[in-house]
Image 1: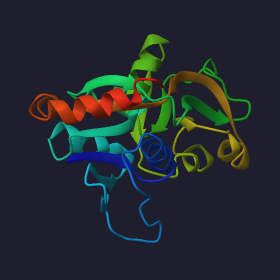
Image 2 (image 1 turned 60 degrees about the vertical axis):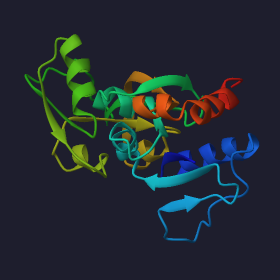
Image 3 (image 1 turned 180 degrees about the horizontal axis):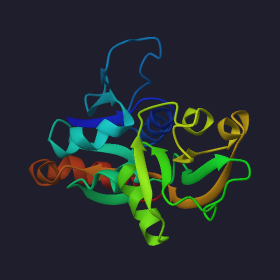
Image 4 (image 1 turned 45 degrees about the vertical axis):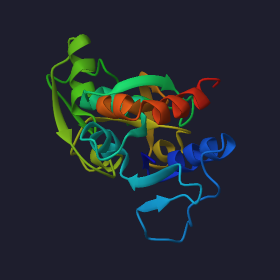
Length: 205
């Protein structure tokens, strides 16, 4: 049996749909259940439902054989994983956003940036030659510039609706992100047949 770590929320739903289409699951986990481990009746896989930022850690530390995680999370964390496949789901972009009228050339000697992605943000502003102070937050990133905590934010954008609702606008796209299928290095060899079959079933994407 393979253990697959999935991020809770929309990406888990898209991932489960892919596994249903490819015959790995006999049904969906109960959406009203509070259980974090789902064992499918087919006996092929079990699913761990975790925070998106934790998927790669579960796989890297061999608590899961494989996982589905956003490219943004992988780049931020620098995990030691095998990244064989772009699943082309969970499409979004990591962008700089700020209150209307602010720009990257607004003249601040040091730009204060609120983000869940401090490493990516630092690298982006460094390449721009802009001195920045990164303020790491874990939620409600859009609030930071509204209350003076930061000048701008670096965060994921899907439709842009949350930015608009908070009077923020997208300044520049740093990167596009989609979900990747990742494997623990050890599992890819100790469970070669199972992981090979799982990988092959997604290769036509």
